[in-house]
Figure (cartoon, each protein chain N blue to C red):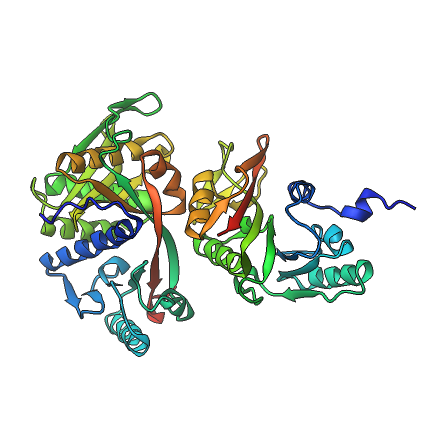
Length: 201
Length: 280
């Protein structure tokens, strides 16, 4: 019986799906999902023999993800840790792919953003791929600044926002190279979500 | 005047981003309210002023044990005086984990990007905006007297969200360094229809032009005034023979400075700590 797309892929981020289709994430790679939540981006990877790890500070989400991992890939060891991203405890240069899907924009301020980013970069292997989706100011005219880099978005949510210059500057500072152009989805008069894909040199 | 820096290699540019700042702090010794102490392996400014800027530590190249004793001594000194402090870190800082050590001790870091621009590149400095369709007429003047400096520092405070008492201290300090034509520390004030709206400072030191204090009143932002006033300072520096401009940008400022020809070179950390008695 064919499995449904939902069973196969879960609620995977469509831009992460794009990376899969393009062959940037292949079986056997070690993948780290920072702020993994209940594992919406990991269903396919778990089912298909990827070596997946993650962290999240919500114990319930991690428990849910551990149960999911047990059910779809019972024969593999999993490592999902309850911890904030800025305190990531995985070793240096241990992953081929680091995913930060809709997490960096929850930074409290610029220092928090930087500390999360540096942890994600630290655990990425040289040559590995960094994939982030995060809210930005790109194409958004009416985000109201709240201070410390945070803004109130037109949809009413408060987020830490970057722009293209910040993404480019951080990529360079961290010793990375953009491997895709910066792409942004503007949800008209609500928010902008930007995809940031870089390789560690 | 020091030799004009013309070496645009990345290492030289990163050095310049810090060296200009260090040179600025040396000038604080002209102001009796701040003592500047150079211990060889770090420089401190010590005052009774309740603002971190005037109680700074910078240019630290400390070996492991010495780092702990200097950190302890500086924190104790600020406790004794009841003032907050600011510790600057950058590419030259040793030990390299000093920022992390400070964070562990309760310092709050405000990260910044060191940026440099080639003033002769031209694309950014040739046109100093006299008018802008969105902002009306922008008039930019160089501050040459204390009364205008006091207006300038209030705009600075309102733009940065700093208390106005900080502006009063800043005015006093800037006057002590000098407001004459030849002063290395110059201040620019932008007005729209006679209302002061934005500030910028230029500090000429270590062979490069440092851009500081770029601030715009909240209601006048995103209209090009900050870029216009920065261009003016860059043009003046270029006309004085300087080749490289440097600045320390917050992440939010990166886009504007890039449009003026600046490139990101290094990270700069501003680590602020206040004694327990001052914490609210």
